[in-house]
Length: 205
Length: 291
Image 1 (cartoon, rainbow over the protein chains, first blue to last red):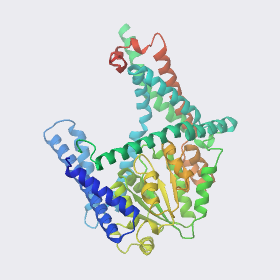
Image 2: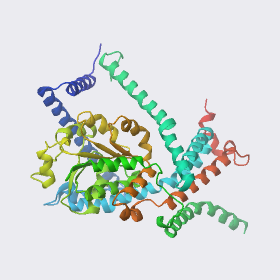
Image 3: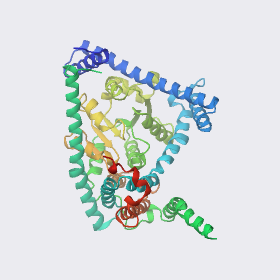
Image 4: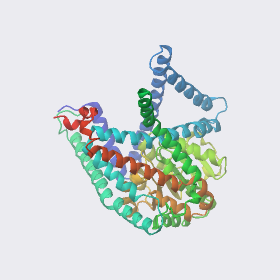
């Protein structure tokens, strides 16, 4: 029976957190808190490493004139602006008004503007989807058309009927399928975790 | 001459998306929401809005409410009106709000919302906490950031309540595609079952969230555009919000009609003899033809 270090760590940490969830024990709680701190620190370190890798990649692209130098320049300038606003002497960090303004006045509207194009990209993707995978796309489009009709923002008796049917559709067929998927995912995850714990698989990685 | 005619015919389809965007923009500008007689985004069944209102009514005076802002920028416009109405309504009731985010996009939205309101003694920014669900579990015992120091009145109230999520009288969960009410129910609800949790999520999350409402793990949920519109109508801040922050029902109707027309044209093209997908050169790429 071969058990790798990552699998062993996952099992140990999982069991500890599960025990802490079920039992009231100060020692167990302290160990669980320390593990959670470590996970939070690891996540923060991973985000930092990702940021550094991104900057290095685009800096290299810019210096060697590869890819999209203008895009790399804009990304690095944006990165620098946020860092400057968050790290200048006396800055309040992520809650500094300058950072908040950059996010609220530049970042959020820019991303919202990009997402607002999604409607038109979807129309284009729909046309292409019909060409490439006619049958599946047709089924999806019919379902989409039904949902759009149910959500039409009309008032009066028609609006009431549409709202009632859309509520039923969300609660019964769509909700049933969605919950079935979630239950299936939960069972598969539990079975897979059990196989790792019991070393049923030939390899744990 | 013939080439010029062909060129102009080819340019028309290319200009069509631009014309569509300009047409929709012009139509929504000409017919703003308040002129939309006969149109309604509000659900005649206002039970969801009433449940949220009742949950707010049950709050004690000077309540401490945690706003977990983890919406995503793609779906936030759908729930923005309801979120702003809920925050304004809580502030009007005298509640003190602390904002926290466990997703980067949620943090951007929280920053934008806080910037919109300016500095206020009734608002506290707890910032972004890295670590996703692990951070959420950790926040149950300690949610104050290291830099909070002595903090203001809200930080002191959280500290005197144990420094964790348990110090709050309610959690208002603004969800998206990342960490959302389901994670809260699983990670926080099981540890703090007495904490009332109210969720505002986009429509796509409704099937996932609805069972938690029925089981009582969530106190109230706003999960569709109609629920959101109904809530904005029943809140005290609704009148001030309706004109500017709630999506125009005319814009929604135009978008829906355009989408339906595009779907009809695409379906007609796929089944019609002239525009059959099978006759298209791209059809060679179809995975249906693959073994």
